[in-house]
Image 1 (tube, rainbow, N blue to C red):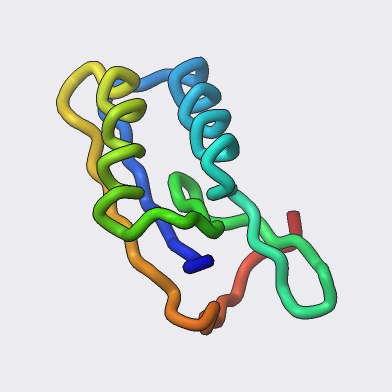
Image 2 (image 1 turned 120 degrees about the vertical axis):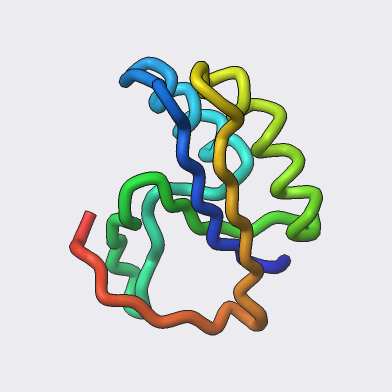
Length: 96
């Protein structure tokens, strides 16, 4: 399955809305943590998620939009989706 990095920004949202966003993203299999070689989990930057999905990038974007927009009261959520081909990525992140 392809891996995706997803960045979501909500506008005017509070802690409750962000917790709902995190729960929805987790349910999709796209989480706030990433596992490095050796099994060590690291925290993604705020509003950034990583995980796998059988969906394509456009379908992931559209699915995130459906639950993110109602959580963003001042304007529609900003959403960026990028597919990591062959799970090739590199990062400097803090341990989770």
